[in-house]
Image (cartoon, rainbow, N blue to C red):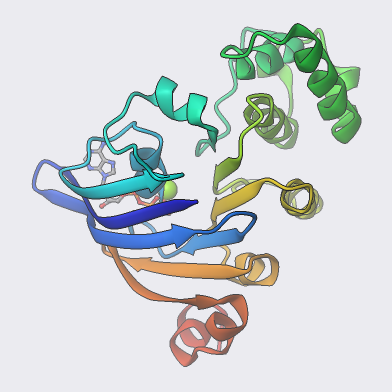
Length: 234
Ligand SMILES: Nc1ncnc2c1ncn2[C@@H]1O[C@H](COP(=O)(O)OP(=O)(O)OP(=O)(O)O)[C@@H](O)[C@H]1O
Ligand SMILES: [Mg+2]
């Protein structure tokens, strides 16, 4: 479904992605792990068309999408839940959800999906008319996920959705992401918590200094001595 071939992204002299190749198959749950500054967010941003790709190709459903407009990439069926749960703080919960569907014109479908999201996230229903900025961190994360789902993506990318959340919220967010995948949406998750990531996913890529240094099934990754030592606490 999604394939990166030798993708390089630079910020001035910094090479944030160094010939990254990876793929996500239809229906899979893939995670991208690695330490701070490894290039995880940059990878998602490059896929979304938010960072210019210097060389290499990004292919989604057979079409090259590198350096395409974010709008055209969303229209192809890719949604991005960015780092730091960026909701529109002055818009209400309901308005934020509708923003997620701004490229859709099937009113009835939008209404149905809004209802579906509110069933999935009852807390959001209780706070529908409240400005999103007044929600707690965990609630804002739920809103960010629900908003991304409103575009009816085929591939949804999450950037560290558990960051800064209380343990019970973390569990809830991970459960929701698993449910989203089980319901048929392909998932690419960036996660600093390698332990949780490797519990959830089918396959994983380890990034280090902008390069893919290891990849394999969740099982293989969990068994890897290097991963155990550095990321799973021995
Ligand atoms: N806008 C920018 N300008 C310059 N350098 C940047 C910019 N954004 C990221 N970088 C650099 O690119 C590298 C990769 O950053 P990126 O945000 O992709 O890392 P990350 O793996 O998501 O890290 P974290 O786990 O801390 O979120 C880092 O060295 C970072 O300092
Ligand atoms: Mg990041």
